[in-house]
Length: 115
Image 1: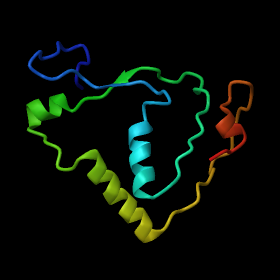
Image 2: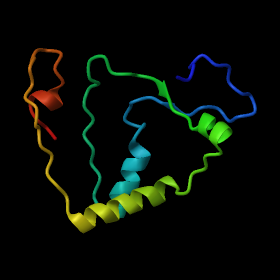
Image 3: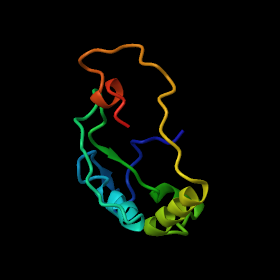
Image 4: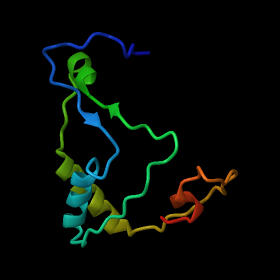
């Protein structure tokens, strides 16, 4: 197990920060929409209860310790994924597990099955 409190190597670039806001996924969403020639009009819903509001994600340790290096850009990876989905065809989203608890804290997207 990696100790998350391990001191940060100052020679490495800052860790990217992810905050789930309307802007956080907008770049990848715009890239996918443009590659699909889709008129993007997203609907943003309120955060879910107990949602993580700030998290960090970094491949710094894998780069430093394992020599990891990316082979594809985000745009290339998304293009490959889109081509795969176009080839096999989209599949409809299925709610396969019924909700056990429904109350005022249950996200609207789950209660009304908005996907």
